[in-house]
Length: 227
Image (cartoon, rainbow, N blue to C red; front, side):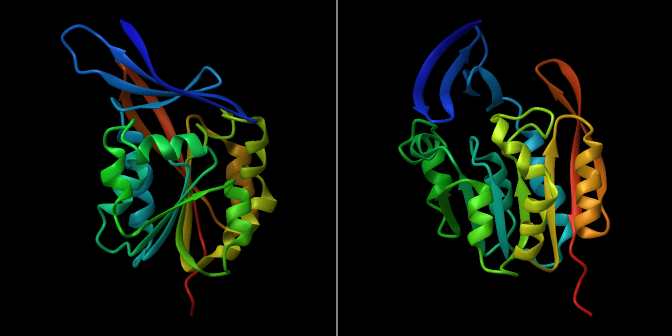
C-alpha cells in the first residue's frame, strides 16, 4: 500500500489532508483526513448515500435541504439525485475543502458543484442554522463527524445537544426532519432529539468497509406535520 499526498491545508482547527491510497492492481482511492483522523474516502460511499436516502424517504416533498458537512461530496450527490429537491445548501467549515472540490483536486467535485440547485456556504453549521430563516428547510442532514463519540473537532460536541437541536427544529418546516450520522450507538443524542422533537428513532445500518463489517446508526427526528 502506497500513500501519496494530494493536498494539505492548515486552519485554526488544525490540519486537513487529502491523499491518494494506491495498491497494485486496484484503482487509486482518495482519502480525507483531519488532524490525522480518517474522515472518509472514495472507496466506501454507501454510508453517505444511506444518510441521504433515509432522510429523503422521511419527507413527502423535500424541496429545500441542508447538508451539514461537504466531505467528498457523496451525501450531496445523493441528495441531488432526487428530482424533488429544488435547493441544496451545503455548509462546510473548511474553505480549503470547498476549494479542492471546485478546482478539480477532487476530480468529481466541479461537476457536483456546477448543479444550479447547490449553494455552498463556508461556515460553522451552528452559525449557519442560527442565521437561517425559520421554517425554511424540509431536511437537515448532519454529517460533520462520525457521530458524537467520534468528533473531528471537540467544539462539535454542541451539535448533538439540545440548544443546537432546538435551532434546527426552528429552521425546519412542518413535516420536516433531521437525520444525524453516527458510527456508534449514541443514546444521549437519541435522548436530546426526543426532548427537542418529542420523538426520535435510531436506525441501524450495516456496511462492508475495507473488508470489515461495520455497524452504523442514523438518528432521526421529525417536526409534526401541520394539521
